[in-house]
Every structure is written in structure tokens, then in C-alpha cells.
Amino acid sequence: MSHIHFSNVYGVLLIAVAGLSVVGPWFAALISALKNEKLDSTMKLVWVFVIFALFIFGALLYFAVAPKRLNRIERGMAELHLRKRQLAKRARKAAEGGIEATKLIV
Image (cartoon, rainbow, N blue to C red):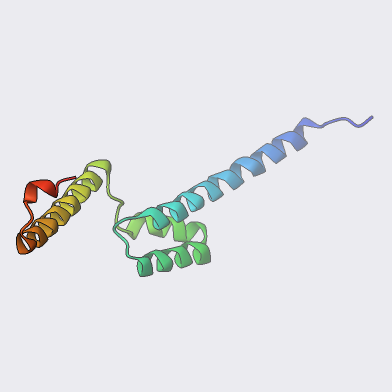
């Protein structure tokens, strides 16, 4: 029957915590770069490459330098602006075609 030495358990726990403290921010930077609305597709690809190539230093660089993601209010304002532009476009088309603008609002 083998005995478990607590020093081995603590060593494994220490390695697990150290690993998670490195992989966690790296993974968060990767997800943030992919979901960042302020980055176009080319810049997303560049940031993903930097994060992969430099690992934890790339993640720290991303959080320090990259443009911050839109917050909930900014995202809502952007959606309202887009909706307003879509409705204006529909109204112009309706005016050209003789359709009442009130029938266009969905």
C-alpha cells in the first residue's frame, strides 16, 4: 500500500495554480481579441498571431495596447445607429417607389 506524501500534493497544487494563472489571462486575451468589435478582421488575425507567438507576453501586450471592446451602452448605441441608417435607406427607396414610409417600419 502506497502512502501519499503531502509535499507531493502541495507540489501538484502549486503547479496547477501556476499553470492556471498563466493560461487564464492568455485564454482571456485570445477570446477578447476575437470578440473585439473595434478590430477589423485583419487586426484580429494580427492580435491572435501575437498572442500565440508571445504567449503570456502577447496577452499582456494585448491588454495594454489593443483598443478596448465596446461596453454594453456603446454596443447598444451602435445598433441603434445601424437601425436608423437601415430605416432611412428604406424610406429613400419607398419615396422613390411611391410607397408610404409608415408601411416600412417593422
